[in-house]
Image 1 (cartoon, rainbow, N blue to C red):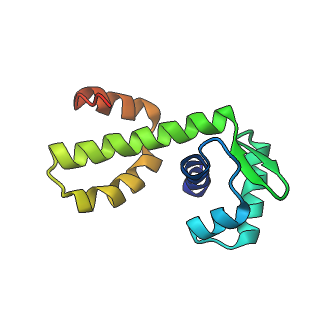
Image 2: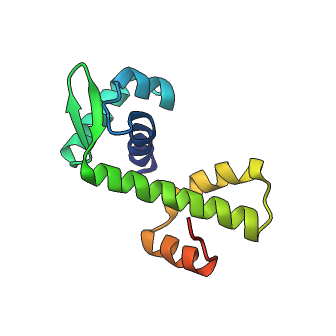
Length: 120
């Protein structure tokens, strides 16, 4: 799945908390044009990750929510690893973890979590 799709899923999870997030809010939050949001929400809906309701926006399905939780977990594992094991500063870890979360298969994240004894 593309990083862009994952960013949408993660954004809806973090800002919707189980409620609908408007296309306008997504566009503003991700810094994209409203037509781009409509197109992506349609794709995510077809993939079964988002339920779309006109004039309300999108809410994650169970599959979408699982994906978002996995992305956030991978991000947190990378932040922990970079800060505690590689001594990156708190200011440096977020952007690096943002890149790495999208390139990390779940199996690798699980193995890394065990390796660094990540308990969260």
